[in-house]
Length: 178
Image 1 (cartoon, helix red, strand yellow):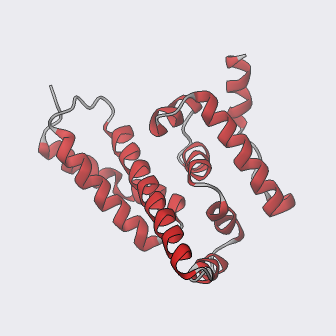
Image 2: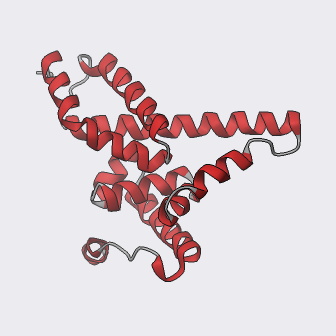
């Protein structure tokens, strides 16, 4: 039995702020986070009745991550097209200026590739396990581990001694995983 339309609305209302924060932490932009969440909810709504959704929160979180990733791919494709046409890197300065207005951590997160950024946001902000993060991103737990390792190394270089420490649960999972 699927979840009803009314249930969908209630779940979205309950999770809206959390989903927006995930989108904002991945995108680094409030307006883009609004757009990402709205588009993800439209996509989720369209497929809601036709799928047996067992974990609505995870389903919606995954929709937000997928939408943010799609937006970054489109931006990168558009930026490459502009660079080929203009050849002078126009637009990069605006991105750097916007990042300079954020905190050091937000700047460092913004410089990570979207896959690494999504792993850091889901593992440390949303406090998901490696398995739940892997499920949300549709990747293997090993990919989550390697992306986390690379992202933390990049943050350590960028932030120096102010870099976030590894999540305490990470060492427990590694011990359990062998």
